[in-house]
Length: 221
Ligand SMILES: C[S@@+](CC[C@H](N)C(=O)[O-])C[C@H]1O[C@@H](n2cnc3c(N)ncnc32)[C@H](O)[C@@H]1O
Image (cartoon, rainbow, N blue to C red; front, side):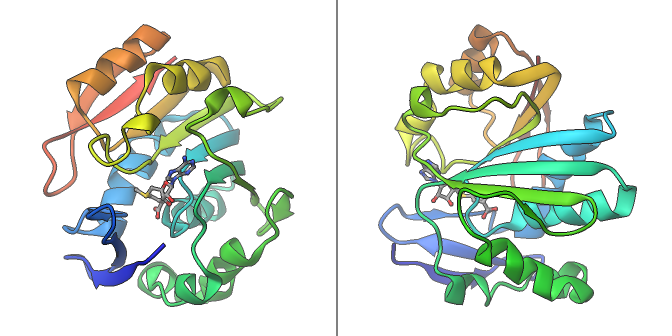
């Protein structure tokens, strides 16, 4: 995939994909958006001391990295499973400035997020372990897991760009592999997405979005 690096308004990088005319994050601030949507509205609302996270779309590893920092900060054990069908090249991932802007002592760990072997659990820090799976989640029925996930970060490209990732079958699958009281967050607040989450069985709230976005969604099982 052809990608271009851009600096967003909070100084953090995002990537632009010319073929899709789409950014990986909000141009108003990539770190700001990930913190708002996935850490503040999602992870921090899970009360468990041991948490299984599922992310759809590993991409730059930003959500995984912020989750790792949160695991270290809080001492909560996090097992993070992330799905990605179009992995970035490590040489590109290494240029991203997320560790520099959050915790420069963790630059090596950020690199490790990208370097670890696909399809295998890696214990990256005391509290954070990672399983990256090269998987096409537009075929959700092929996703086989024995886990039940407590927190789900739904971070596919926008419905206008990737409609196949925003269909009822996907949200039904996520519901079926979620634990009781699981929380899903996504940056997309479209009515059609909200209704699909409700049809799957989730109770859905609209929450204020980060700068540049009016609303986001949080769904609870
Ligand atoms: C909006 S980006 C966000 C990525 C990531 N969470 C981040 O912070 O950089 C969407 C991601 O979904 C991935 N993706 C696209 N289609 C997919 C598919 N069918 N299955 C799994 N991942 C997919 C893209 O390659 C991209 O990395």
